[in-house]
Image 1 (cartoon, protein in one colour):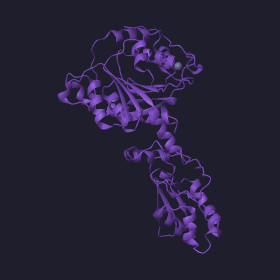
Image 2 (cartoon, rainbow, N blue to C red):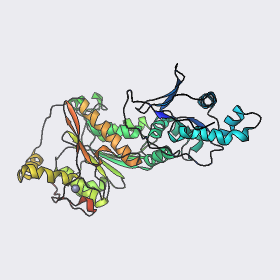
Image 3 (cartoon, helix red, strand yellow):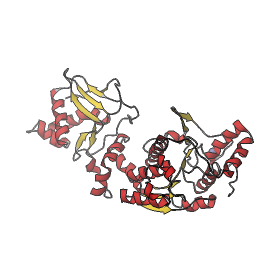
Image 4 (tube, rainbow, N blue to C red):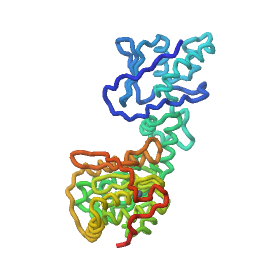
Length: 401
Ligand SMILES: [Zn+2]
């Protein structure tokens, strides 16, 4: 038996983006059970080749597999065996003599991520049956971002440990809170002083007409507690009026999601200042855009964004901020897909950041919704802002209104 080439097939369809770096082959494979990656399905084609069909665009093909390899792969597909069990299956009389050869034969499949250790074989003690049953398909998804056999548990463990604060529980914020709960975030603080109104329901689809006049934070908490007992909730039925309010609300949070929109700019300045003081990363939805994701010590923050706006508008920018802060009512055109899009994007970015599974797009960019187009605009901070130094100050002292 010699090593069989496992060649990438030409992309046919499907999204790119799966981590295609060579997978680490775990040491001490004797007692380890093996299975096909859940992202790949083995198909035996009429021309004799083996085609590994991927849900991503990285299909693999083995043009002329020896019969013994075909037999071994079928055993793995059906029984998820250990290498020793495979050896006993193919050479009943002298399994020890073929073990090393089987290992050599399968190593290219392990490196390509086609064969992966059986997940339950590495299940940590904190993952009880109820947790695994609820989050099983997400664990499968995390495997697609992994390069090592334990990575998906590490990623999920970080989500279980994480505490996210969501400021603003309108359309995007309420959907984001529910999405993060669905993803198994360990602790969630939800913050809003507003009440449910019939005119909200076009965009804020988790609330109901019979909740009219009730606190959004309270209504959403009822919904989330019914939805999942795997997350701890802290419910704050209140507005923030200054940086100190923000600090009180985000106490203990590992990440802050900003989905509130008033007072525009001023609120973002309070949050920017509070998060920099706490060295807490944040991601904002702001005026038809999401990002940049602020990380302490890296370029890109709300102050950078304002520096950019001042380059365009000069001192008018700050006059505009004053005028917006003075406004007491406003009405924007709305469509239900806006909050859904923002919440989807923010949930993905926050999960990528918290797990460390892959760099979020908004770590160095801003996603803008310019209907009918959505674009990712590179944003590497502003040279006048010192957020990257780790000792940054907001560009304008936030003042309470
Ligand atoms: Zn900055």
